[in-house]
Image (cartoon, rainbow, N blue to C red):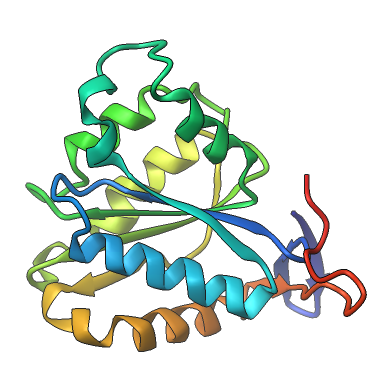
Amino acid sequence: MGTVAGPGQRKLVLSAGPTIVGIVGNPKPRSRTHQMVTAVAEALAAASGGRVETVIDLVELKPWLFDFGSPQLEPALRQVFQADVLVVGSPVYKATYTGLLKAFCDHIVQGQLAGILALPTMMGGSYHHYLAVELHLRPLLVELGATCVTPGLYVLESQVDDIDTLATQYVEQLAGSILLQKPAKDDPGGKRR
């Protein structure tokens, strides 16, 4: 990931064929938040020629989240650290992200996500908390070292049936600030870090 400057504008340059990992902080397995994160990750993969490595449903790791150094968390953390892009999603709980997501992020040292692009996403029941994605989730990811796109994505629960369309529109909107390089035809997987 780098930057290029054009007349009056800067763009992040995302390497060709990025590895994308989703992180879902919903305490319900296979939730609407999971659908949202998956849809955004797949839309970004389609636009960039990348691939979705995995979508980590943190509720499956719940028994070990407060056991620091737990070997059961190592595979998920390794996937996060090896990603080029993270799509991080949470439902809005009490005007912020969930404790489940926070507990997982406590295993990541400040600055450890440096060089990784993060797309903060949240889902809520109304627009009353739409700023939670910018005021709470983004600062968490920046504290961990990630470079975050602007804006994050906020989706209403009532929009879940349109999530694929919303995800595609969101990724298209990001194209204004991210240069998405597709891999060359003779390199279908793109470069890997």
